[in-house]
Amino acid sequence: DAGKPEIILVEAMMPQVESALDAAYVVHRAFKEDDKDAFLARVGANVRAVVTGGGSGMKASWFDALPKLGLIAINGVGTDAVDLVQAKARGVRVTTTPGVLTDDVADIGMGLILSTLRKLAQGDRFVRAGQWGKRPFPLGSKVTGKKLGIFGMGQIGGAIAKRAAGFDMPVAYSNRKPVEGSSHQFFASLTELAAWSDILVIAASASPATRGVVNAEVMDALGPQGVLVNVGRGAIIDEPELMKALATGRIAGAGLDVFTNEPNVPAELFPLDNVVLLPHQASATLETRLAMGDLVVRNVQAFFAGEEVLTPVV
Ligand code: 8YV
Image (cartoon, rainbow, N blue to C red; front, top):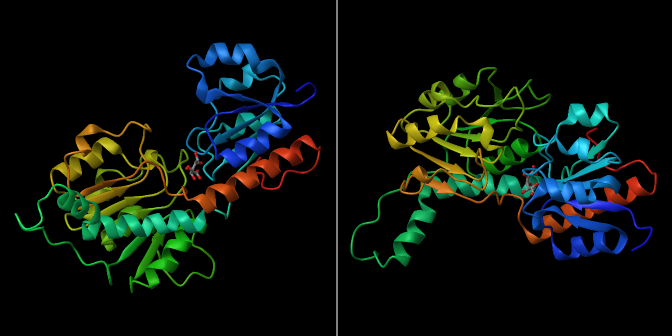
């Protein structure tokens, strides 16, 4: 291993991807270490790249522990868990994996809409519990033709809108600014979008500007027939308010792939049948995780070859 550059891997990746990294680098696996401070003190001095996930990111305190750091390669599109300002100030490049996960995340957005309104997960629990034939299964709510509000009309929001067309759903959206060439109605106000929507899907990224913006007012505008779906980041929704709104029927239901404090999901949600809960799996397909991993590896290779990285955000 002498002479191989040293990197830190924050979370596990697919075996093929980890093998490609192991072949070229000395890989220090942070996810196998309980005492992160001791780990950084032991290996930090020579680490030149950190490979991490969108949710995991890198704690800002790591910058000081990694004096030779030159690259943070995110295996995902969310940059909210990395301090980009500090990365820039320290001359550290940051890359993401745009494009390759768009379809999968949009698919899970539609899946959560279908699961929540049509009670797919609830039906599965019902059959497994031997309840079929013993008591009636509750009616769902029709999906086709429902008004879909999309918060965050980036690549993922756009892919959800495209899928919604197949369900004859009118689409409107809210975004930092109107999307040029979009035929969908734009709402500057998220509350007004929520009032218009039967279903509100969050496909935005987390930032100081979107943190907690899906608040009690937005949920009340969505209303007792409304359903909230989140494939963006947990922090965009005021989670305690969401739990109150769900428990008291101020909104009809929610489908959630992301949470404020992953992997900790508020236990108050577990008994609620109008909620579908997923373990941040929207980009988790074999095909997409391979494509994401490939892009991560190529970014890391370019960095160590002294070439321009492929998909930088910093
Ligand atoms: C991944 C994500 O699950 O793209 C993102 O920002 O959060 C997800 O696609 C994650 O990056 C892998 O840990």
